[in-house]
Length: 92
Image (tube, rainbow, N blue to C red; front, side, top):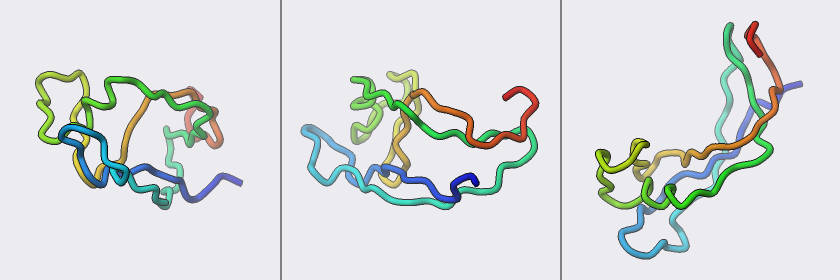
């Protein structure tokens, strides 16, 4: 049976200079049912890239990054490797 919840790191306090100890909060979100054409993934490896620091910078300039800035309250995103847990897609 596929999981119905997921753990997420949320940006609590965007850094301006140094990264505060309470910059992130670990929380749990409910997962919606997998719909036609969708897949549910289980992350095996997550990247930790230097660019992520720029993504969370307080008042980060969207024009200077290839990714949209992460604002306080947003879930942190990263690249990674995952396995398909549930699929309703003919591609995966």
